[in-house]
Length: 145
Image (cartoon, rainbow, N blue to C red; front, side, top):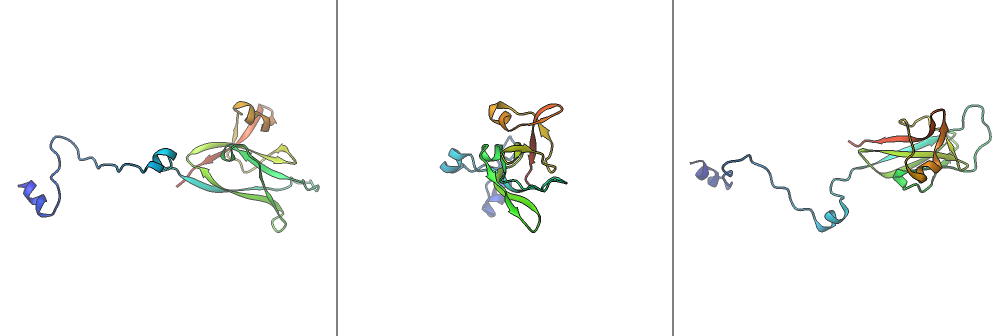
């Protein structure tokens, strides 16, 4: 009787013997190759200001990190805010990234970081900041909604 009732509304009767599990569609060939079907990304604004008491402006302020494959991204000077800033787009979400601010090519402290991390590998070690506990990089917790 249930089968004939479902046929009246154009629905199939549920299979016997197990829970009803919805079928997942097959990903497109492009999605299978790139793995982009569930990729979540976000944007982040990085800012840096001169430390208190310092008046000499640096020639360059840059950011490098796992989100840029350790390629330098220049920060732009904003005279109104008296700071340097850059917006980095397409940061892979739901993971922790390591990064470093470079002022005139040297590591500089970022008071807005999410924490400190131990560098892994020679590339990260080359950008590490020396602390009382040894070399460290900054952490960015890349969370998406």
